[in-house]
Length: 127
Image 1 (tube, helix red, strand yellow):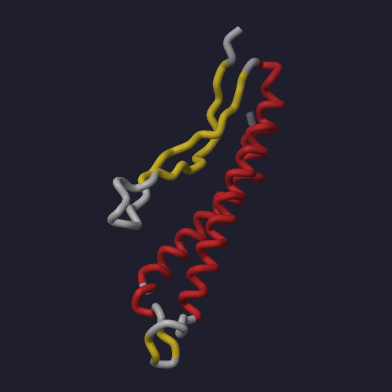
Image 2: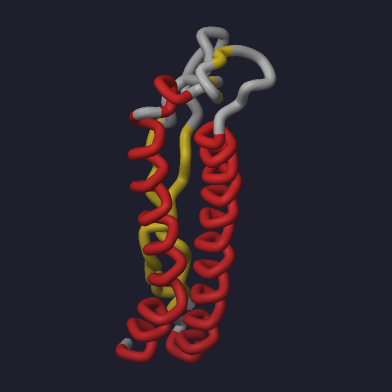
């Protein structure tokens, strides 16, 4: 199991840590988003998008890419672990945790659910 631990630590953990760091920074930026929204040179209104707004849009885009990186890395790690454990009749799956997302519109009946990769689960394969 030490090879599996090292695989997770070296391949999956860096992608997960990059995503977590990005989420923390994004949350800090969003705390002051509305006060910096649509203001440039003392003007307020259409066509005066601030650098802050552009930064937030870039952060959203990068957050989606970092989430995708975690998904892809977790699939790769799971596949490598399954190759290592097949002869022992043990199967690995990606462990997921769900969390509710806030509603972004009053027209939504309910908020969406996000699934986060939280690790690897192991299952015995019955004969």
